[in-house]
Image (cartoon, rainbow, N blue to C red; front, side, top):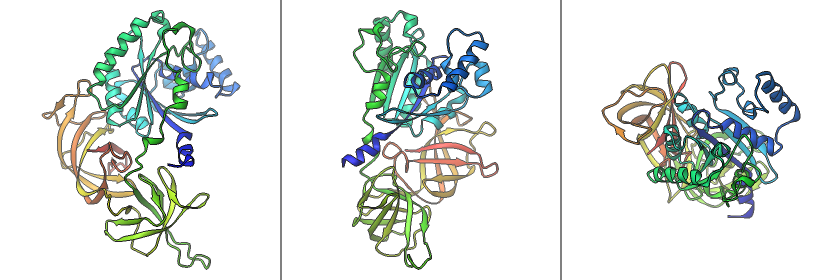
Length: 423
């Protein structure tokens, strides 16, 4: 992999926060933004004025992310709040997700594209049900890196014993999960200990601060560079004299590295051809890799349109109409219907499907499967099988988060009712 590739990949890091109610997620993000000098003075003045008006001591940094009036009134996060900031090393997108059990679907939405999940634990309470729930969701969504921030250390006198006790409790639980990289940091979001600056109060802690970790965690290999996948989004035909015979296929690389001269297979037809050229935002390029958006030109003209996929001849996805999914149900009006019909979106492909089977509901707190419980309501996680009206080109979600994800849509309301991960 070239230096240029690595540079592009370490530029943007997406991370999500998760934790129980009042664990300090919004305060932590406010502290990150404030201590890294990523907010304007007028924003700071506004939240200072609001804090004073509410009779709070000091400045409530949580108000930087809790923007909805109902969030500020209740002191909780309800919807996913996205915040953007940058340091000389990296650009960041933060998804501040709710801690309440009834907002699990919001957490799934915010965490689905994250490289890192920050799980906050209140040092006084230790590992609680919501901690387990969020760790399980992070594991289901295959978030590559998990950082456990043991917060409010100032309220337990910065005791190393308490920190280690919580660390051991979480590690014994996480052993059951599919989590590859777990890191622990003792912090106080309110005071700023080990968030951006090292704390003198935790001399026993020798690891990095949270900001140092976020700036330096290796995310270049989080993408799949092995299985070449290029879902076609749009066919480019300029129809002018300069490009009279030009036919290009625009889309975003979902996996693998595609090079000029590569032999590729076109799905669903199965025809084989070679890549003639790859056109990027800055002109022609010899290769393309995730998550670049490019225009691919093939040596021969084939009938290829939106929803079709360009793959390597000797490395192809599963082509099937029957798909096993782990889903999180989003709809608060209607439960999942067995034999119900839904529209679906998979990469750039639109289709319709029927729910063939509901295998089990997952008890999110214990990881137990409940095969008798087929009543799938909002925020429930379940394993189902769908049959689509046309073949889908899928990989397992653990192998590729783009080609392994599907959303289901209610055809009557056009609402997204479920997010699914291919098993």
